[in-house]
Image (cartoon, rainbow over all chains, first blue to last red; front, side):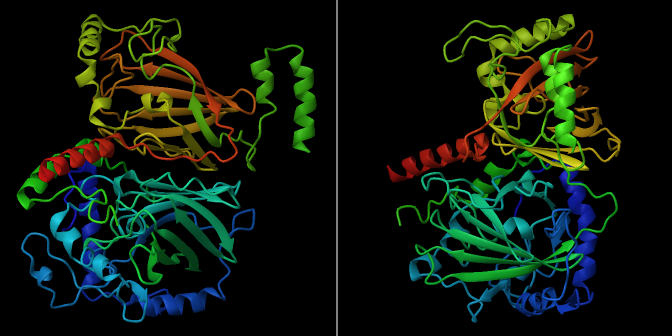
Length: 307
Length: 256
């Protein structure tokens, strides 16, 4: 199900303001981004090629300057990272119609998450989707990497180069990325966004994340990882206003092999743009109604717990 | 050679002025010359329970207040309301609903927070309730109201080595502490952040709310740097922890 969070009025105003942008792009806007095809795999392949010759803007320290406001392109959607076919029945859903979208999975070649059989029955619009309230709807967090598909975000790089802050509009979620060699945190500690360590691989920011609680979904379809997941994100500037975003998922409990998604992040160009408080928890009025009407349970990793 | 120069000046000044002021000249700085407020900080006081002097109560450590002068200048109706809040605090306190505690309360919750500083903006990320404050220091004004934000809108500027932050656009739904001290949506804060040495950050806040108080008043406290070499901001999300308990109860019922 698509998110139906009771958010503050101001959040609704922002959503309404963003809607025309999405519509404009859906109705015949150009299907290239930064000179690359917009389809995620084709974009990723082309973008990494382009990035080889692009010298990104830099901070005084010499590190690439990824700072600013970013959002995912309208072509990429959070319904399913495996894509939504144009004849999918949910596209005609009267309440929450989905939109056709190409898969964001770029590896393996069949563009499907390499689930173990038991896990495939939970994800991919399976048990999770039918039985549980989308954790994003319950004012938790969209989680990694879904946050980077959902609304705008800001990357903050203090000049001390010791941390990167990635602040998302969505439910005022933030991530703290500690740069450099740091001791890992004890595996018994689990958090919603995990604990992230970052390093620079040439001009690419590589973020390594463990200590995840596995309570978030990857998309609206209930695709998931667990508390043993290890995520590696790679952010590479393709031109001054475009970032290629790639995530590798490793979770031996769930998948038969590591797999990857990729999509584009585009710079928000509106002058004077600022992130605005979205008080999901405090404005929440409809969660219990949605749960009761749909018969949904809270997720909190219940479907995979004990595996 | 900024560092050598400031140290020698500090040594000279040290003989004539209070230690706190001298220490300000010797703080770490960001490349643009501003005091570097970055790091993971936390209070070591009992303001989260009660911002005023208070004896121990069951589950509440005794504490010396952080209100300058000790008294909060409530209007008569507001003092009655505060006492009513205190009596019903176990259910009426917005903290018990898992909401964002608002500003300034989130600053002195007994959880760490981390400051990120760039030339045009400071961000404060809180372990408690995944709170985050964006403090704009690029000279932009407050957006036009009325706006009701749980952490308000923060615009800062540097007054010498002190960061001065003006905060408006609040809700009237947050409290100052677990003892029922409260304000309205007309709350206006002026916060002053100044380093007192490398590991102590002085926090002074002037509180103005003509609907509730007869005059502005102040709180003053210290933030202490968390110095454990591997310290990281973790998470404590009260609303979600409550929902997780609810989910466990529902599972229990289904299993029976």
